[in-house]
Amino acid sequence: MNEQEFIRRKFKEYYAKHRIASVPSIESREFGIGDWGKKIVKRHMSFSSTAELNRFLKSEAPLYISYSAAYYKDPSARPMEKKSFLGADLIYEFDADELELDCREKHDFWYCKNCKSYGKGTAKKCASCGSDTEQYQFICENCLAETKKQLNRLIKVLDEELGILEDISINFSGNAGYHLHIRSERIRTLSENARAELIDYLTLAGFDFELAIDFSQAVPIFEKSKQVKAPLSRILKTLKEFLLRANPDQIALYGGIKLSKAREVYENKKKIIAKIDEGRLPPIASSRATSLKFWRNLLEYAKQKESIKIDRQTSIDKYKIIRVPNSLHGSTGLIAKIVSLQALADFRPLEHALAFGDRQIKVFINKAPRFRLGNQSFGPYENEEAVLPEYAAIYLIGKGLASLCE
Ligand SMILES: [Zn+2]
Ligand SMILES: [Zn+2]
Image 1 (tube, rainbow, N blue to C red):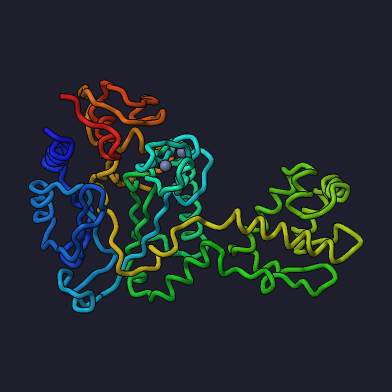
Image 2 (image 1 turned 90 degrees about the vertical axis):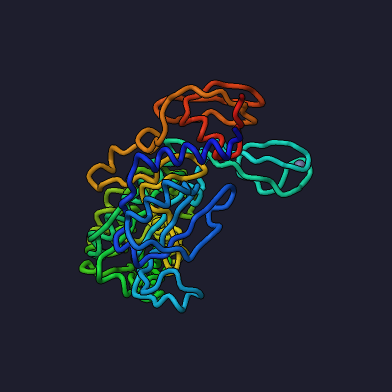
């Protein structure tokens, strides 16, 4: 049996035992499926009921299945205009890919087909011959903790600042992140412009200090009333935390001032923070220009830290399709598992989203870094045979890094 048949059989077994009932208004959604090496090979499919979707999953067991954020009168019609758009959920995606995490240098690697060399990290060009590389992404607990942090920040802002945290569904992406679906009636009709404004608000891309703070005053001031539940209050909170924790070197670096000046700021940080709480950015030097430069630098630093790292394009695109919650992810064999808001804090995808068991399977592994899955660590491996639990074997086969040993 080859690897593709093996995975297909395992996916069929999974769908025979697990009913997927995670898509509300299923008859109004467009579906798409993917296969080896391609997450979408076919779109414009539709299912009249959950039962019909499950019959399809059991018989075809696609490696990937996605559904539309949008609701259509006729979801399988082509081209897109003929579907008759009725509205769309708001979906936010978080992926460790976007976070530029240091751990990726440890567990991700590239392979050059041309000269057959490998390298650590995410380089797009081969270090030896300059050809385009193939990328192999792994995930670790740090990747998932960091994406969860972003998700939690989003949830807080949607709830406390925007008041649109209703009819939500959260799921692990099946690979390196999370998806948040908002399905309330009142967000369905938002235009692409409104969706873009929302993402600008969340990422703070649209936030202008010059409008929020009056820099023309001798001591820049901001209105205290505006602080409440506004992006500025988040930014100022981060700025104050920075002042509390930073050492003089960091203050000099991020504030763009001399170390001697930074030491003074460090000594007086309590007083400075008290002024900020009064709605002022106090002078930190006799030169007004130096003070303003310092505050603008720190505000910009805090803004970058407070920006929620969300994939911009997918959250604006009303016609996109996204993984069906609770379906399997073909590159990992993990479940794109739904997790409740209450359970999110204790949810550990590498343990809780396993679809397959621990029957031992012998595989030949081309290459894999040390990785964790299902409460165990594996590897590193290079051109060697290993006996792995089925879930770990499927994980590597899905990435194209292992083959079955007969
Ligand atoms: Zn090369
Ligand atoms: Zn990582």
